[in-house]
Length: 344
Ligand SMILES: [Zn+2]
Picture 1: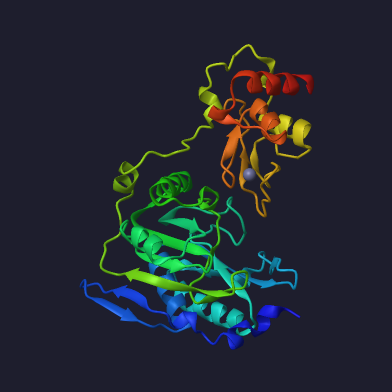
Picture 2: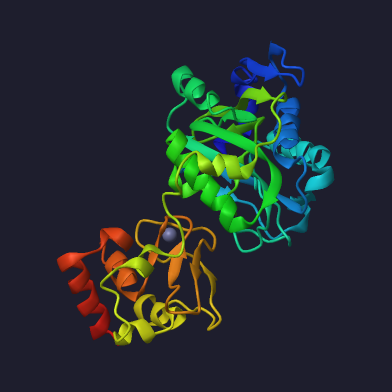
């Protein structure tokens, strides 16, 4: 039996009734306790407002062994139009809650009803996931960055900022990386295709509710350029190896197309025109296609889930448990280079 089927009844919203700090549009501050549906609706208000496209709502059950099992993510019924999504998302979340399911949603709208990052388009929202800390101090330091919403996910804190204008997916991820630096967030959660726990849903892993801590309706949407000014992008594209001084144009490895070396080194098929694949790297269990492989050798590859990428040499190094990019140099680079060369 799914142990969570009983959870909402066994824990009758105790944590859910913990207070939310609600800052109204006129700046007045109230401390309120909100039912689950209202929490989900407020999450939608902050996250979906001004966005266009499909928002994916993912329901999941947890097995007796604690493994999360997502329901089909290809079912069009799991996708709702962002423009009039709050009602539909609230209804889906309520239904899931009644079944003891956990609920997630993708903050970036999709062009098509498909999971993963390749269908995620422009977004009018950025976020940070600060894993493992849920104390008051952490929430207060996050609140200093004035997000529009802070959720307690059950296992950490999620903060969201609405943007004054939509940004391209690459820029959105770059802004998320900057926010990670500012807030000490988890760099694995910057992916445009990321799904986040929905406020008003149950976190079965932690046996706690995902709930709203702060809702700020007074703050205007943020200018993405001003947000970007605050801190450097820690992982700017193109992949770091493009700047490696030891990169030589006469190196035969440099002429091999990334789809070809992925097939040879990892046994993974990539279309010759490039594309997104499930990350084959050790240490990253990629549920979706987070790893992008370009067609051109000088662009290489990059995994947006585990933030690793580069050239064929980087791939060999990472596949053997080594570093990549700026961290791969000297003897380790020579060894990985020799190993890569020997495989072609
Ligand atoms: Zn990866």
